[in-house]
Length: 478
Image (cartoon, rainbow, N blue to C red; front, side):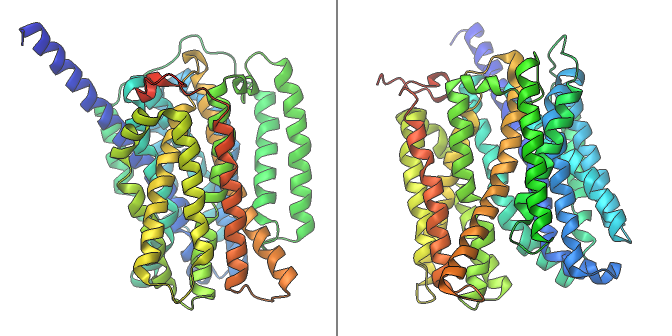
């Protein structure tokens, strides 16, 4: 090998290592955000005693964080264009860490809610800006591998959060569920400063304040209504009114976006076939998957008679499957291409999800683990493919708008997953006249959400076999 070739190879290897390090830094930050959003759930009763508050009122600590995410995610792309992706991503980690400090030192519910809103603002910046950082620094040929790192924290967080929260609260103090974010956040700030390059788009457009107002009201009201409807958190008329307000605000936003040159959520991105498939099919797929953290632990505890700790250990199996997926994503997409991977894998994932409907207390534990491990593996592959496909054909100057739009829909789809699961369970219980859910009710709910996930498969058929070949490396002509 000549000196020039050797030098070029060394530069290429160095660039690949830097890209992987960037992906790992972003993945760790997203894992912290995803873990924190669920770890608090098991600590709420203990926190209610510490604050002298009613346990039923503590759900506001969850909804305030969720609403903060919904409000601020759409403006993340503009901030990244204006101030630079590294600057905004580092600031997001700082804000999130500061919010964790304030949450851990809270002595009242109102103070906790304010701290959670601050955390939500930081989290809203971390999710889309972290993805945008990869899109602007990683070559398309390495994007699938980089996106695989981002699929794992999305799956691990909801699974690890509840059992970890229960362990910390049982053996230590509820304050430690927030304290554990501090060293992770400090390390993240240092690593971003040292190893992540700053990229920004020159000459950004003016901020769409009117669109921000309409989209904030629409997203926050819709997510609040979906999150609370049928769960007894607030009176049903309040949830319905929230959905009504959100729908009206959404209509106003659509009218506004049609006449604005650079709206904060740009619906014209749906004209890009690969982005539209990733967004719409991904939303349907995530609705089914988003139901798992809600349905599975409840079924194991209420229908199987297991303890919270036992159900947490079984639920954790799906995250182990996600961990071993990363090396397989690139190979699968290279051999099959995006279209066939998304079609076949959606069918297989929906089937594996439907297996949960047939679980009984008599099933051998190793079979349940096998089903959950396999499901976690293929679901993670599907998420990786959607997350990469979404940006395959998006022009560079519209990348920030695409990340905000896509991230907002991800948040909505996971909330819809819980809502669809809860509605399926409630309707089944009403039909069977059960005051509390039994195994058959859970089975029906799992079949419903499996069918929703299955609907993602035919949408991928609208793409050619050669879609996004620059990302997948798939060369077969269909």
